[in-house]
Image (cartoon, rainbow, N blue to C red; front, side, top):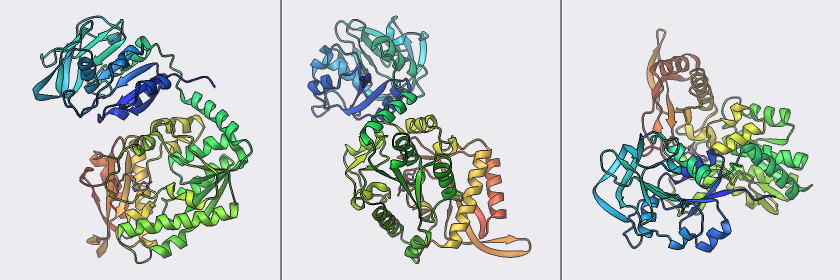
Amino acid sequence: MKEREKVLVLDFGGQYNQLIARRVRDLNVYCDLKNCDMTIDEIKEYNPIGIIFTGGPNSVYEETSPHVSPEIFNLGIPVLGICYGCQLIAYTLGGTVTHAQTSEYGKREIRVLKENPLFKGFPETSVSWMSHTDYVSKAPEGFDCLADTKAGTCPVAAFGSEERRIYGVQFHPEVVHTEYGENILRNFLYEICKAKGDWTMSGFVEEQVAALKKKIGDKKVLCAMSGGVDSAVAATLIHRAAGDNLTCVFVDHGLLRKYEADEVMSVFKDKLGMNLIKADAAEQFLSKLKGVSDPERKRKIIGEEFIRTFEKISKQIGAVDFLVQGTIYPDVIESGKGKSAVIKSHHNVGGLPSVVDFKEIIEPLRDLFKDEVRRVGLELGLPRKIVMRQPFPGPGLAIRIMGEVTEEKLETLRDSDYILRDEIAKAGLDEQIWQYFTVVTNSPTVGVMGDFRTYENVIAVRAITSVDAMTADWARIPYDVLEKISTRIVNEVKHANRVVYDITSKPPATIEWE
Ligand code: XMP
């Protein structure tokens, strides 16, 4: 297989580092985000067509801050430094970095001072996003100052050397607030690194299917399908390569949304012809959850029952050669970092290896960001409805019913959630809002219906915008849409007489209520 062209994004700890990598990939160039402590030999071995230094929270003058060996600039590989990365280039090559009394944060007008390949196609002035305290006050010897800020805050907002193909920008080209940010990245990739742009999802599918065919041959593969995007795309990709040698198992724990289990069966078994086994385990899960109201205990029970159910089925299937995992690139990046406190014990299929008799794990999506997984799904012909599906937690509706999970509350939840999804779709908001669902709050309130007093559930609507689920803001759904949602829920759903809208961000709240 011919080697794919790659850009190396060296991570200096900035908050937008994954975004830089996603932007580069969106411009059809493959890149990896790697820790900034990579050695010169490792970089040579990786063989990138260009290197990007990300921003970071440090100052180049602190001893403990990450630095680079000057050797990196003698490899003949183009370099682009962003924010801290820009200061680091200046510092390492003999320019001057100065500490400002106040930080500069937000939109600034920058002026291009000299024609150069990085700013090709730029107007004389444009808006860029700044977030820094230190700044470059003098470019290194042999480098040109390419831009400054109109307000005079950054005398060297960008510098570079066309001959050495090394550039630094103080602002953040990766964020949308930088008007011509995409142009900076595109110019770096195509004008300076001379990229061909060979990273496309159709190319990825073709390459992966060929590689998987070779790897799998006529061996047996097992995949746990949750109905979520990642496992659906992973299974479909493997199915292309392995056909009937792939068996998928779908555990219906009875905590799924309205019509969800039928939809999974109809798409993957009936339409795509996959060898898909459904385990009907609703009664088993509900009986184990009876009387349990503590959120962590609910999660633990569901996680354990899931594994037990899968164990039973995998015993019937017997030994397999490969077990599929829907790991995606952000998981790969995160797993290289430290562990933070457990806020909630997440349930996913990570616990399965202990109960399946298999030889090797395959992770066909481990190089992809979520938006790329979605594009691969569309490329494979999966329905848009499945591919654009919002995230859904492993423990399902159980963590959206406060207190004990009962069949009656599940019905109230499913019906209200279905109305919410319907109205959000009708309003054309379904692909703008990251996640939206209803919650049965377990706090009945008094209402009046006709001439009668009611004492029923409060239904909470939760709808958030986010880029990675680590932080979230509540979605500004228009009032008239909220009104329709509320009216329909109280009229059409049994045991619901009031609707409230959750207007809390994460942090301090979390996205789910439990
Ligand atoms: P929180 O509530 O922690 O949710 O802000 C962050 C994101 O994770 C989803 N979530 C889960 N996903 N297993 C999963 O696979 C889980 O146990 C789980 N709990 C929460 C949640 O829906 C949101 O997208």
